Image (cartoon, rainbow over all chains, first blue to last red):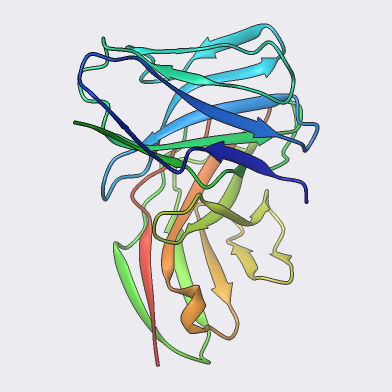
Length: 114
Length: 110
């Protein structure tokens, strides 16, 4: 089935450690996105990438880093600089940026810092 | 970017139509309206989108007012599985950004 796979579903890390969240898509989409969701809130954009080897900061990029070495993969690293990393992280992808096609989302990774 | 306003919660009886309103009074001519829903602990699921004409698909109908300042998502025969948070999003054409609000929590009652 075509879709977006995020792994793992749950992730626990000690304070001060960097952690990397995986996102893979087989929809042949050019654009990929990372969002953060806190309880009872909507989604906020962390980073997005329109094409391989290129990415831009979203609204809350501080304390996060990304890479886009392959079209199908867009991993997110939550660094120790992120003050409050416990949240639900969602990855999405869409067709070319200059279209009205909707974003498709994965099922998320719930990160908890111990 | 235009902002959206939705009621925080709604109830609907099973089998009845669920009508979810959204106000986007500052929408501009090139901004699309998208609807997603999110069931607890899952990623948002795309439902439907439109620019100015009414749209229908297998999941729902989208009614956009003539002045485009508001829209309504209609689930024609709500089931218990439609219980979720529904987000109305406005997105400018040729941009990447979705602005998510807090959505409407729809509860379908048996």
